[in-house]
Every structure is written in structure tokens, then in C-alpha cells.
Length: 390
Image (cartoon, rainbow, N blue to C red):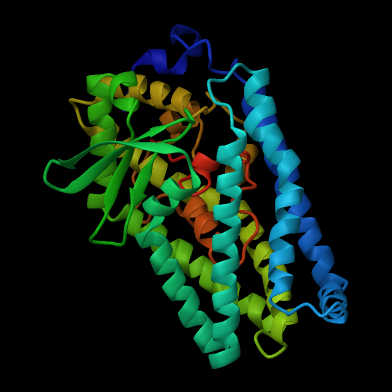
């Protein structure tokens, strides 16, 4: 299928002055994300391999602290480690490239408290379930937590991020649509809720920024994701990835038989598994993007508009016009504009948003990487609802 030739020529598109010039900003964000993820993964691997968790617990017991305080210490250390990286991603880089977005002190503190508090609550629940009912009990707790996380994803995004509610309306009688006003221009919304109770979440400004035709394409695309079951494929894949990783990590950690030490080891090993997901799942997410692009291009009344829509959405979410294939395959669930146009094709299995949904759910079972990746580091509005493919 052909598309508007202007979509392949960035110079022919009007780029907002606040949008970073072409390549430097996305590459620096990627380098920051790689640094952040790499630092946490290396620390998790070192702590587990050296058996440091046992010594750590012994030190706490000598001071008369309860075991559960170990999880609080992890939350605090994680917050301290992430602070300078969040400052770079949420303040320094946006200022350097004259972005409209700046993280504020109060919003950041609120987000960190909510994010850390929910992490502490969920891993504590899993720990207690394991102590009372063994690994089957912990698995049941994890499944329940992930189900609640899917059901209340929109609510958690509102608590952690800084949003104002916009319009609410049914979309062609299929899926209700909620619009949110976001301080972060890269916020792209998504689909929230359990299967059968979905809500489309759309950035309110897109209705005016995209224009009437591009807005209609965006709404049609979100409905296609729902109608074709692509979101359910992504949910199932993300849940299974986290469950498999949990069982493997629990087995290696001796969880829950070895008490709090095994829970701390479980956190380290789960983080390593989630890192593996960051390397493998982006290429799976790209299948859904290419499939949806093919479907949208196949509609004769949308074919000539698709290229313009793609460029507009790409600029809004701070995407790139082109990338090297190996970089994209590993680090970017959403392909670049050029690759999207070239590689659009139909797939039978296309798990939409699987990589970043896995990352979101990993936060609810002890993972430490959910706000460390390049797309959302230092940007609380994107910690729960990470950027999508439009």
C-alpha cells in the first residue's frame, strides 16, 4: 500500500519549535534509559550472586528491626538511586532541548511516594501469602494483584501522574472514551480495564492537535485494537511472562521457604527476568504496530491520510523518523516512521503493547525497572501508562 510521500520526508513536515531537533534528544533519552536499567540490573545481579541479602537481614536483626523493614529499605534505596536519573530525564534533558514539559518538585515527590508505596504493599502481600500458603498462595496473590492492576490502571495513573479529566463519551457505541489533560506532551493514553470493561484513554489535546481526520483515524485504530482482540493478546502475553518469571525466580530463590531472604532474592531474580523481557518483547509489540498500520492503510478512505497521521502522532510522542534495525529490535516497542511504512503487514498473532504492559505489571510483583526505561524515566505521567504506537 502507498501512503502520502510527505510522510517519508521529515523536511516537508512542520515540526513544532518545542520538539527536539531530529535525533539528539531521543538518543540521549535512550542512553539514559540504558544507563538506568543497566545500573539496577547489575546491582540486582551482584546482590543475588554475592548472597548479600543474608548479611543485610542479619544487620537489620542485630539492630532489632523487623524483617518487613527490609522491603522499606529497598524502596528508599531505589528512590535514592533513581533521583539523579529522574532529574536528568524529567528536568535536565527537557530543559536542554526546550521541551514544553518540566517535572515539578511536588508532583515528583507525590509520584515517588505512591509508586514506592504500592510496590511495598504488593510485594508485602506476596511475601505474606507465600508464608501462609506456600508458592501456590503467592501465585494466587500475584494473579489477583495483576488483575487489580489491569482493572485499576487508569486510577493508578491518575494517582501517580498529574492529570485533569477531560470529556467522556461512548465511541461508536463500542468502547467508552475518557480524555485526560496531561502536563507531559508525550502521554499517549492507552486502553485500560479488564476484558469486557475496557476504556479508551486519549490525551485531550490530541483532539485539537491532530485535526479532525487524524483524530478519527486515532479513534478507529484504538477500536481496531479492541475489536481484533490485540489488546487481550498483549495482556495474556504480559501476564504469562510475569508468571513464568515469578515461578523461575521463586525456585532459584527458595521462596517462600527461606523467609524474607528468599523474598529479597526473588526481587533480584525477577528484576533480571524483566530485563530479559525488555530485550525480547519489543519485537513482539512491533508485530501489533505493523498489523494495525496495515489494517489502517488497507482502508481506501484512510490510505492517503495515514502518512500525515503517522507523522503527527510520532512527533507528539517524541518518536524518531528512522532507526537502525538492531537498535529498534531491542529497545523500541514502537517502530520508527520509516520502518512502520515499509514493514506494515498482517499478522495472526500480534500482542499489542505486550512489552510495556509486562513492564507495568512487573512493578506489581516486585520488579524494579518499571520507571527506569528511556520512554518514562523522570516522567511520572508515563510510569503507569507508557507511550503507545498511536
